[in-house]
Structure formats: C-alpha cells, structure tokens
Image (cartoon, rainbow, N blue to C red; front, side):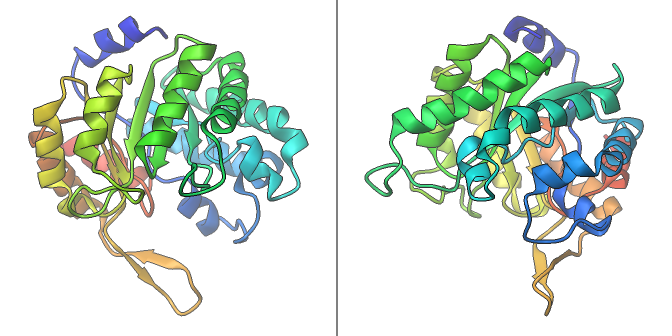
Length: 289
C-alpha cells in the first residue's frame, strides 16, 4: 500500500482496527514474564484464532504481533540473533489470519530506553534499531506500519525517519498520554501532532493510556489541530490491579462501544481497542458506529 492509497482509503469513511493482543494471549494461557513475540512463534494457532476473530468482528486492519520484536528489546531475552526470523514469522501469521479480508500493519513500539541526555541511547542507534525491524516487516509484505504506545516525540520521529529510509509504506503513529494529553517524556500529544504531521506521519493519535471515556477532550482538540486522520485505540477502561499483579479491566463491550462513538463524534477516524478489549468489543463498536 502506498501513502496515496491510504489517503484514498480514509476518504471512504471510518477504519476499524483490532483490539488487544497481549491480554487475550494471557487469558489463553501465555505465561507472564517471558518474551511474548517468541511465545507466539511457538504457539501460532492461538494468535491465528484471535486475529481471525477480529477479522470476523469487522477489523479493517490487524496489527502484526511484532510489538517489541526489535533487536534491543529481544536482547533482554537473549534473542537478538532471532530478530529477523521472529519479525518475519509473526508478520506471516497475521497475513495468514487476514486472508485478504483485512490489511496488516507491521507493529513497532518504544524500546523502553531513554534517548540522551535523559538516557544513554543515541538517536542514531535507535534509528538503526527501527530501520532493521522495519526492513524485515516491509520484506514480509505488510500493508502499512504502525508505531504505537510511544512515550515521546523523539523516538516516534526516529521511527518515522527509519520508515522513510527503508520503504514508502504508510505509517500511523500513536502515543500513550496522561489524562491532560501530556507525554511521559515531556511535552504533549498536541505539540507532537504538529511535528509528526510535518514529518510525514499518515495518521496520528492515542493508544493504551486510559479508557475511551477519558479521551474525548484529547481527541476533540487533536482533531482540531491536524488534517491527518486521528486514531483512538484506548483500553477497556482503567485497570484494577489484582493481588496477583494482573490487570482487570471493568469496562464492558457495550459501554466501550458507546464511548467510542463519542470519540468518533469528537473527530476520530480510525478506531480500535487496546488492553482488555476482545473481538466482541470491536464487533459492538462497529455495529453501533
């Protein structure tokens, strides 16, 4: 898919993303504390079942589960030498699940390391890390890219720069924010939106962060300052942390759908779910909207 093709697709109306991956895999038996990406490679049928259910629920775009499959994060699991294999295997699984009925986005995210001077990660090193992963994803045949759950503007710009150096695929960018729109590394989603628009992002918005009922003001203000499609991919409400350390999300599918309709009315053009959501959440949201 080209950037122009993505723009033409957006002219047709609202696009629906998928919902959560990690929380559903845990529910299906994935142990905590291991490398999610490697576990999916070893248990592909669980991912295929989940993503096929998202397609049946009405998702127009599936996120390949390559979320943290960058060399730096995989290195913490001793898997850095499997970076290419893991990315290509996971992208192929999502393409199989989509079966031509949905697009597949190659998914990249924060490395969790801070850039200098806040940390010791250089911009050039981060650029190389993202460029490597994006190369494998583009070679795998994904339709577009998404940089999601980003915690700051600098790392998101590195993802944009890396993508531009590798391919011409569209790239969506979503950051995780505080309730007032501020970013964890400073600045705000509104400042970031202006920069990302100028630097070539094809859609921008918010994911994870909180429930949809907390994001209406942010989405409305974001829609007012950019001509790009605005993305809303929130959690199923704020999590309740249980005694075993797991997160429980209380917002049910009907309530989630109602709140997502409010975000659509506030200007969001690309809608999906993050932590705690399931195919039923996507189905209810699409039926309502």
